[in-house]
Length: 143
Image (cartoon, rainbow, N blue to C red; front, side):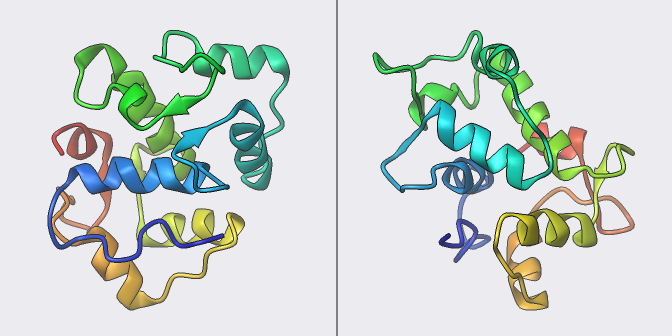
C-alpha cells in the first residue's frame, strides 16, 4: 500500500480528506469500491456486512458503478459532514473525541503503513490541534 499521507502538510488542508480517500482507494484508480471499503475496514478490525456497507454509502454521490469518487465525497458541503465524522471516528480509537499521534500511528500500521516521527510531524503540521497536540473533531471540520 502506498502512503497516502506522503508530502502532506505543505499546502492545503483539503489534503487531509484527499489523503484519507487515497488510503481507502487500494488500487489507486480514483474510486472507492464496496470491496475496497470492506477490505480497509477489516484491516482496522471492523467486519462489515452488506447492510453495514449500504448504511455507510447511503446518501453519498456514487458513480454509475456504485463507487465513490473523490469529487463524490461532497467534501465541503454541510450535508456530508457525516463522512468526515465517520473518518475521524475510525482514527479515534479510544472514542474520546481526539486523535493522538499514537492513535494515528496505530491505525496507519493496521493499514500497512509505518509512519516515522517525521511523517507524523508532516501530517499534523498546520492542523487545528488542541493544547496537547491532538486533533479534535471540531478542529477537523474547520479544515
